[in-house]
Image 1: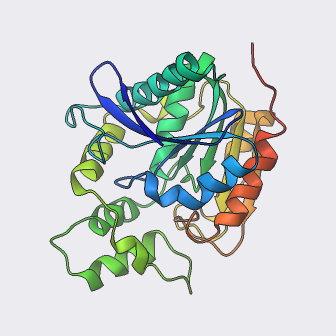
Image 2: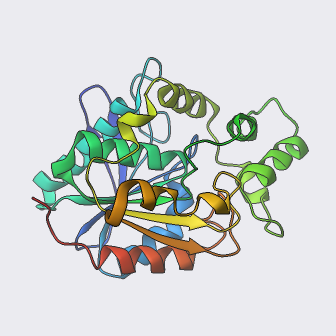
Length: 263
């Protein structure tokens, strides 16, 4: 089931399934909610209500695409959560952000703490990573490039060796990719990095090019005991299509241990 939620300056198509405590899933840069069908089903089956807001420019989601910051994208998420609270008496949400989506998830927790129980960051990059990797994400979505070249960048940036990246040749939205990249660049990293004071699950992919193994404990060392670290083997930055069952298991286990509300 999908609803269209009106926010301050946008309309956000939101896919909803399941019943129970609220979990919101945010996608990777330039991609949409469809990448998380299997994970959403698994979480809903475990007893949760799962919302997947489509980013502006995907599906029926509309709104300004230029001049945005992560604060704007986080407000879209916050208003989806607030709408759910009004319509279905849902409580604050665990916000799950994959790759670029983790920036938006952390921004949502920083800007709207009363709406967020916790933040799970999937395949979150290290604080610093080579600019070539960010450029590779842009080239993955570039329809002017030949499929073989795009596949090379997909394999480099997203998938662990031995995993077939071809399914992700489809599903990129170049205008969304450009808009989100600009929003990220327009927002100081320190504004969203700490995710307010929310509990954090740092769900890492063992072979993520954006997260060298020597940085595995950096976030926990910086932010302390509110950070839990879980590493999924045999996965790269894409993580979700590579190891969906492991992602579901880790999320359900961590969410089940969270308090219902933080004062």
